[in-house]
Image 1: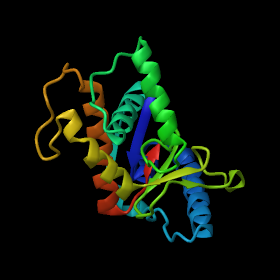
Image 2: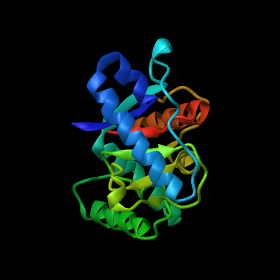
Image 3: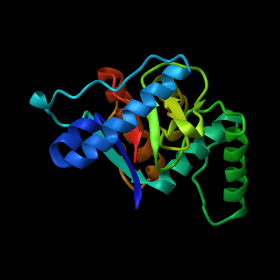
Image 4: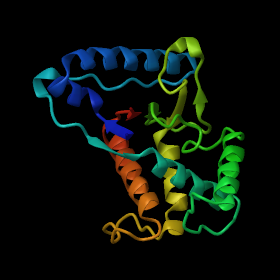
Length: 202
């Protein structure tokens, strides 16, 4: 199993899952109301059923790729060199501690987010939001900013040998999982900013 990422999710649901469409409409309504309580004016753009189109973005990757990408951000933030991940040694445990340390600062939109659910919305706010449990927002109420996620991705791109305008690198390199996750999230951010939709982890 892995993480699925969608932008323009209601369009996909309208095509393929009418029951899911109503579920996600209600979920977006809860999200919009919870954000309004925090002073943030955003709502998922309404679905024009007469003009249903393909979702703006649909993708995903294994959950472990996300952890690897967060590791790159944590290392970069500490000013340490980014080396290929080795998940079976003491170095990996130490790097996971760095991720947890970064999470405790409640500042990173890439790190302070649930692995398997939740939202990024195209509104520029400084720190990730932690909405109250009774708001009923997926992902334990953690909501990130698309703009800030894009900024963090741009910050770590050089460490992964990524130039956003260039084609994807050859597969099977030492950073292939991180590069793949980076490009999926980068595309999701661009789609979110272009159309005003949330990025949905599910």
